[in-house]
Image (cartoon, rainbow, N blue to C red; front, side, top):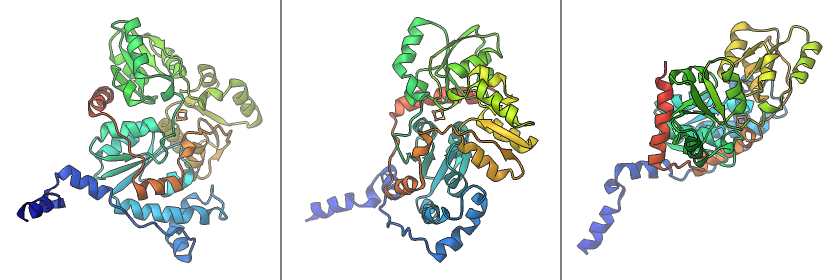
Length: 362
Ligand code: SF4
């Protein structure tokens, strides 16, 4: 009799190790939200519709609003933060996200937050980067099939083969890579700090993976010899100088701003090139009359919502991976706590070293 009661007491929450108790609390079942469009939903989401009314027609809002309300309530209940990359759709970026930015900005801010749960509005490598920097938080990706042509172009084994081929040559990895690749390289870089990172190594040759266009754009700004991998972003590689020159002719006074994942000949015909954060900063501070962001097309929608008076010309190159993330899938993530991103802790620690080395470069 005593043994039975002792067993029951040992299995009770009070005797579970803290980490397990916290995990059980995080994953506790919740009631399914009501997703009807009602006057109450209209009233409670009206302030959010104000932010997106220039880009989301009124007829579409009743489809988004019940999800927006349910997600915003549930993330409080779960103590969750939603991170939204600049390429997420406007209803995600403006109406449910707690943090917006590029992939590294998101992961670094999430690392400092008190949240238990991170929901990644972005693609899989971004969710991995969040997990690498926040190993104690539960990181969820609403669709684990949200990939990236750059991240998919190289594996950890490919990096090991490169190191065998070029012994002693340091390897720099763009953050658009898997945890497996980050664990094998010497240091990471972003599109905004790539030149500085390459030069910080104090050598005359580096290997740079996986984006051949970012590598080519960096090579033009440094004396360091760059050995590049063959990856490319399937969105940015589609832009051509001819197409952009056509816009210049058709839209006098237009300013063209390119992401450095574009081919160098595209960057050459533009007025400015920089990371998504630098592009947004350019538009917000310089307020061009007319601008074309040579990048994924949702970013223009998101920046347009914050910069009235700027005329955005929008060729639309969508990232199909980013568009896998939707409001219904974010809600599903929060209700069922899926899909959880799990990385082997030893591999995550090695990957984290590469990211931290980059952060340490001033
Ligand atoms: S836009 Fe390009 S780099 Fe970004 S996630 Fe899509 S494929 Fe990857």
